[in-house]
Structures are given as structure tokens and as C-alpha cells.
Image 1: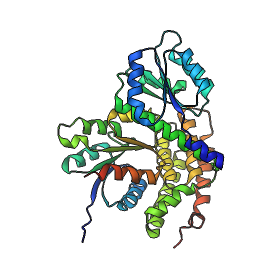
Image 2 (image 1 turned 90 degrees about the vertical axis):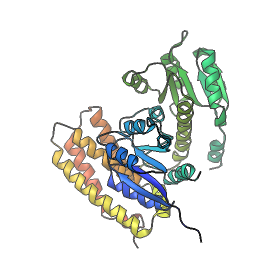
Image 3 (image 1 turned 60 degrees about the vertical axis):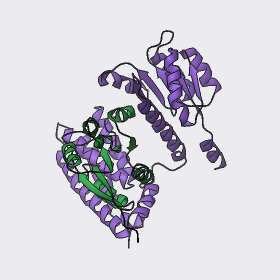
Image 4 (image 1 turned 45 degrees about the horizontal axis):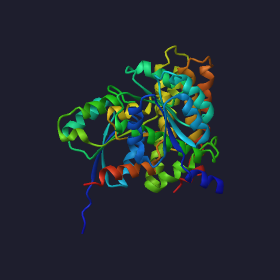
Length: 128
Length: 257
């Protein structure tokens, strides 16, 4: 008997359609999703619980995904090193290097390649 | 088809043009794990020679160089390599407004100095992947209503009833958003219209509604570039197209239980 160990993933995304979509797809990888719809909610939820991975949209209300990532990375505890996968429709045509400068480990452009997303989720959550 | 498979397997190399020897060696060291040959050139002229002689997949160009500056170098290298090949600037400019001009000029991206190894490696890897994906996409029809590759992927990850529910949610939300757009069409302030278009674009693209996403992207970019368009007409087109495609998508996408 092996017990299923759920991976805890914080998904920051303001579109509820994409939130639900990611929920369904990541369940496939035994992920338990916590949703946040704006940048401040992301930071609140990140502080109050421990996660294995963050999936962060760039274009978020209140606080954008780049600033939220920088805030997480500026923390002094081990939590600050959590893997962060950035996702975006890149409406502002930002240079991709800025996502990595902010501290994201990976970046994927929307529409998402779901196979690749699953691959990345595995890569960052299977280590332990 | 054979030709295509071959093309995908043959990897080109990376061209680095920088007048500073230490910078060149640094870049080469960071990129050596990417499984590509890295060619180094100390000025634009040497860079051009290499660009003509070798198969190049990506170029990195320092902006401040004495003999030929980064912009002129970009123009000539772009001409030699074509529009598909990513060309990245390396620059000491630190404020993002100054750096945005590189993108507008035609560079695909830029790396800010001091160059951080992770940022350099990840950004280069991203653009190489992007190039690879484009090469395989070029084969397919791009103006179809649906992107069936995305839909097939979704079907592998979600149960049929869940998927149907997701699509239903998307369709209902898009209908509501279209109504909002029709209501806003004569507004002078385009902020809200742009933010609605952004949501539709992301949702439609993620669920494989390729053409809907494409027409929305086009309107979004025309509005942003303040191109003179008939906004009302374009919004009506999107609404018409949506209601048309939504009338029969479950059959076309084979979603019916």
C-alpha cells in the first residue's frame, strides 16, 4: 500500500477559466492546488502555508507577477528558494530575460503547452 | 517530411559578438552546457564573416562596441541570418525604458549587465526552444479555427465530463465578456476593453480556440499601437465569430459524451 503524497502548488492566475484548467491538469500529477487571483493574495497565501511550487501569471491585479516573485525571493528563510514557473500571454511584450531577472526558474508563454508544463512540474517537485 | 525531421535534428551554433575578451569568454563558459558550438567574434565584421560561413541559431550582440555599434551590427547580422533567428542584445543600460527600445528596434530580447549566469542561460534556452517550436509549427495550417494539438493534450489530462464543463465555463464567460465589449465599444478609454481582450485571448488560446485568440490579439495590438480602426466593427466581428463557433464546438472538438 503506497499512500499518495500530494504536491502542494500555489497557482497565481486571475482568469478563473485557466485556474480551473490548471486544477484539472495538475491533479493528474497529484498536485493539490491553492488558487490566488491577485499578487497580494499570492503573497498572503505563500506566507501562511508551505508549498512545493508556485505557478505565477505575470499579468496579475494589485501586484504583478514579477513584483510578487521578487518579494518571495527577497525573503530570508528557506521558503524564498521555492521553484517558480512564470506563465504569461506577454501582453506588454516584456523581454523574457526580465522574468528570469526577477527570479523565476522557468517561463512559459501562453497558450500553454500542457505536456511541457507537466514535465516542468515533475522536474521541480520530484526531487524530494 | 524527411527533410523536416533532419532540420530539427541538426543544431546550429551560437554567435557572440562582444569587443571585451573577458565578456566573450564568460558568455562561452556559461553557455557551454547548452550543447551548441559557441563562436566568438570581437567586432561586427568578424561576426558577419562567421554568420555567413556557419549555421547560426542565435546571436548575442554587445551594444557598446567601438568599430560597429550594436544597432548597426544587429541590422547586418539580421540581414545575414533572417527574421526567424533570435538576436539578443547585451547591454549596460539599466532602466527598463531605455532597454525597451532594443525590443522596438528589432532585438528579440536583451540581457542586462552585469550578466547573471542563470538569466543568460535561461533566456538563451528559451529562445532556442522557441525557434525549434516555430520550425515545427510552420508545417501546420495556422489559420484554422482550432488548434487540435492543444485540445488533444487536454483530453489526455482531463476527464471528458470535466473538459466539457471547462469548455462550457469558457463559452459562457466569453459570451458575457463579448456583451461587455459591445457595451464599451464607443468608449474613449480603451483600458477596460484591452483588459477584457487580454482575458479572452488567454482563455481562448489555452483551450485551443486558435482563430478566436488570433483575431483578439490583432485587435489588442491595433488598439495599443493606436492604429485607426473601426472599433465597433471589429468588436462586432469578434462577437459574431464567437457565437458562430460556439454553436457547434462540442461536435467539432469531439467533446460530446
